[in-house]
Every structure is written in structure tokens, then in C-alpha cells.
Length: 120
Image (tube, rainbow, N blue to C red; front, side):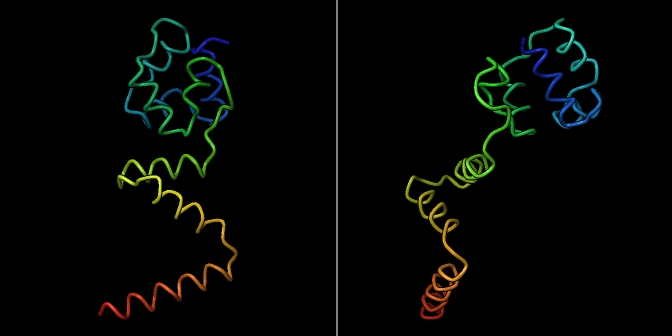
């Protein structure tokens, strides 16, 4: 399957017209049509924008390797890391917290509340 076919497959899975698909990534219907019809090769920056907007695996879209969609948890954490300049320890803290049971989260929140109250 070519990159053009993968673009079309992605658009159809998302149930979007060429116009709707293009609008979400800032291009016209004709750009999407030309990519799908193999009249133009999409630039890497555009491909990355599509991957970000639709949470698509870059390697799947460009080479047909791996799963079509990014793992949502990893994708969201990567986005947060980039936006807030998180280091590995920050990411590990977040990942660990998310895996806690409801009860353990409550214990942790109460612990933090006590720390915050002492700082006042």
C-alpha cells in the first residue's frame, strides 16, 4: 500500500470528506485529492501535522510499518512532555500515578493536600 493509499484509508476510517480532512490540517480539498491520487508527494512537515491531528503512527503513514494509530496513553504523555518540557522522572511520576488504584490515588492526593496546606 502506498502512502497515498494510506492517506485515503485514514480519511475513510475517520469518515471525513477530503474537504473535512484537509480543513483540520490547514489545507484545501485539492491538496488531499492530489495526495490520494498520487499527483504530489506529501512533505514531511505536513505528514507530521496529519499524524499529530489524527494521532496516527508516523511509521505507519510513511512506510506502512506498525499500527495505524498511536497508543493514546503514550501519545498524550509525549504531547504533555513536549508542551511542558517534562523530563523522564516527571513522566515516570505521571505514568505511575495513572496506574494507581482509586484508593491509592486518594492517599496520594491527601498527602499532597497536607503538603500544600503547610506551605500556606
